Image (cartoon, rainbow, N blue to C red; front, side, top):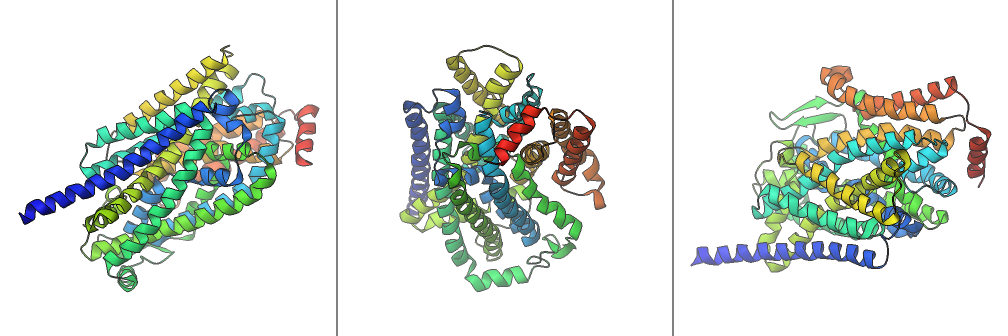
Length: 521
């Protein structure tokens, strides 16, 4: 009888978690439906950019929620859990600096320039900025978006499948398909406004989830003292210059070159289409200052808490409350393991655990939806209409965009079919791709009058190619070559832009006059 009662209680706890998650998913779908009813997806400008009507809070939080992705509650805590604070900490510092500088340096100039050129997508902006009437720049940029957003989206779907499989024992593939269907559903219905609104809500859910996990995780570990003692007893775990090796409790050096390589994560922000679009969509450039403060503060706090969760999770494992997680894919489930323990304390705590699970979904969905939308705009607007010159009606353009969302989601599902893939590794590669292919082009387009179309094209291609070459051919050599591919690719792309621009014809008077007008606004 006691066994039956325990099983009934466990069943009730699972039901409570499931109810929280279902209500959350239903809310996201309703926002998409409501946005569609309000006409947010009725024209290209509305579907891709929300009619430039975003307020400062929505701009800030949708930008940062779409930035963080599933790695905030899975990838980053997993890295801290396994290797200590060095790798996770330097990554977080680089991202915090990149976030602030992106808001400070890029946001206002891009908002002005995109309005001046009447651009509604990032590829669109590149072509119009350099008067690329053949839209070769837009075409290459659209291809880059498709190449790197597909694995990025796949990492999100992988996180959804892992969540439901770990929590409910639901088949990983079935869970992934259901999650993908929900993300696609509200994205194709409501477009940019639905995506931005859901991202704001998702950032709130993510914040609540992290705070709940920290509070209860410390209790499970035996208090702050137990967490601190466990971390101190592991070689190099609390060092910013060493990596902890859990296999034999030793520490490996984390030297200046590796630190510089890890800090380079921050360079990626200058080329992230789904973040840059928020700068273009804000209703008034004067509100960007408030958005910058809100977004930067939230990013710093959320990443600090995510690393703390990894440290706490390791202490909980040491206390025997959860199994020791030995691989990166296992370590990335630490938040799920902690939530599972929380759900055993009664119905109220099971509902709180459900909110945490919804937080993981929020991390995933807030990025996947933005990426799907950016990819859809690249295909229907930049490839079909701008480059291939296919004349289609506004309604047909919307249909093409929605079909593109579905097609990319399908490819993402195929790439995420392996449940043992690492969220952190997938995201790091896609992040490098965008940062190197778009980041230098964006900075030179906004701040160097002498840059031209040939230079921008050379930089974009060079950045994308070097990411692949360095990742798969150079970095495996190890030693001094073991540098995060974003750094060498970013530098190579910047050099290509400068050299090719100076060796080719200077921009026309029309382009330089427009540059000066935007600069002096």
